[in-house]
Amino acid sequence: MSTPKTPSAEQGSSSNYRRSLGTIALTATGLGSIIGSGWLFGAERAAAIAGPAAILAWVIGAIVALTIALTYSELGSMFPKAGGMVRYGQYSHGSLAGYLAAWANWIAIVSVIPGEATASVQYMSSWDFGWAQGLYDGKELTGSGVACASVLLIFYFFLNWFAITLFAKTNTAITVFKVVVPILTAGALMLAHFDTSNVKDFGGFAPNGWSAVFTAVALSGIVWAFNGFQSPLNMAAEARNPGKSLPKAVISSIVIALIIYLALQVAFLMGVPHGDLSEANGWAGLGFNSPLADLSLAWGLNWLAMLLYADAFISPSGTGMIYAATTSRMIHGVQENGHLPGIFGKVDKKTGVPRPALVLNLVIAFLFLAVFRGWGSLAEIVSIATVISYITGPVAVMSLRRLSPDLKRPVKLRAMPVIAPIAMVFGSLVLYWGRWPLTGKVILIMAVGLPVWAWYELRKPWAELKPHLKAGAWMVAYLLVMAAVSYCGGTEFGGRGFIPQGVDLAVVVVLALAFYYWGVRSSWRNPSLLVAEAEARAAAERDEATDGDDEGREPAEKVGAGA
Image 1 (tube, rainbow, N blue to C red):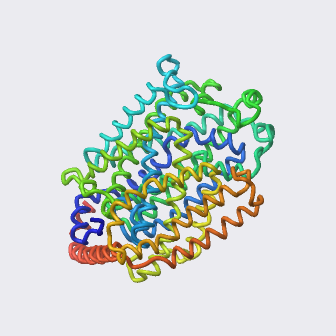
Image 2 (cartoon, one colour; image 1 turned 45 degrees about the vertical axis):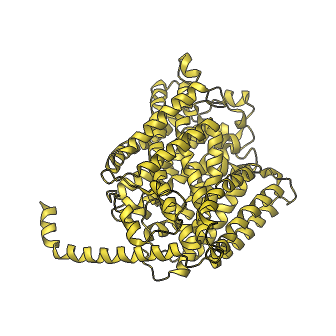
Image 3 (cartoon, one colour; image 1 turned 90 degrees about the horizontal axis):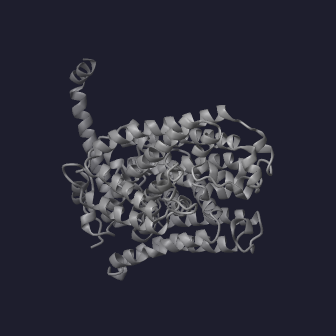
């Protein structure tokens, strides 16, 4: 039941996707995922944790995301398949490691959908109407707020129900608006008020120390924001030229977003009224419901506040729409890995949309909305689950270089043997910076998904199951050891202080490298990899045949293009 599909079967299911997304559309998908609700709240939350040093937190977050994204870009170009992020661990290590990575990745992404809806409603609560102010109580959504957010979830669902071409056109238009408004907001706030004394007073540049900068990377929504780089990879089956467009889309979206987020962070830091900081006793005491809109009103920029209130629907809704699309492709990928019923692998022939997967994700999004009603609580869960999913890429990319050295790699960096272990170290550090007990709670959530894996896998004969368990042992041990280090680590990261400050970071680095090399050495040529290799070779042969046909028609096509 959990045996991977044969090449012909899988090609049949994937062939219903439409390869209609170019570099611009994929970049818009990545940028649209990154610039969602994070820009509406991230600047304030990062400043509350790290003060003005939040600027450095955004840079660190972008470097971490970019390093990890480079590993996934090679994987995505090798296997341009729907829900790519949930497949790579399965290809390199078999069912156990593959399932854990897929589960972490899916949890991180599907919970973003209610998070975006929550952000929109939370901004709406600042409207000057009694009914609107009753949507949010200062900590979480009220019953009426949850109802409004539920309507938005249904809206995201139906935008994805009909066709990928409708998604692409809608998303590109929304992304243009989402990019313009943050840039306009940063510029307008800087022109209205730019008080550099905010950086000097109230504890200086890093009032809570450098450990707070690292914590801000993990918990303030920075990881949440940059995690959007994986959306183009999950849409790889719909890319026209994945080898060229995927890496361009991933890298471009991260760099563009970093510039925008830095501008917004500076605008927020310099734009907060000095008196408000005095009353709040510093950055940590600020309590805006709608941070950027509240600042706009404070400096008489009523037009900007109105624009932000409108964009609080458009920007998160655009991201929610994207994640509704990408998570449905991830569910399709998990099903083809052999860990969900066959219905979730069905793709509608007319629209090219995996509709049963869309329905499943809608149900899960409602569950998350019912449990986590505030943007901040969702951002923390998403961020840590995201980091756990990150560790698969660095290990998988080098594992597959060892296992399948001759497989075609449209994107292949010479520096990958250096980049991959660095990415593993970065991901492990961010996980540690997430602070105990949150790290332990999210690792526990990872264990919640194991019964699904057990249902499909434990019925296999021991001889068939054993290599999957052996190859996945490194990941299970990694999660347990990292939870223990987080518990025993420095008090500045929520631990008990058994490991001295400074030494704790060195311990995390050494452990990350140890598990990286263990993971690479434990990879094996499992059945899923053999199927993927066969598909990749068949696709390469088809491409070569198509290129030959195109060469024969080249003069006519050039004439047509010129006309």
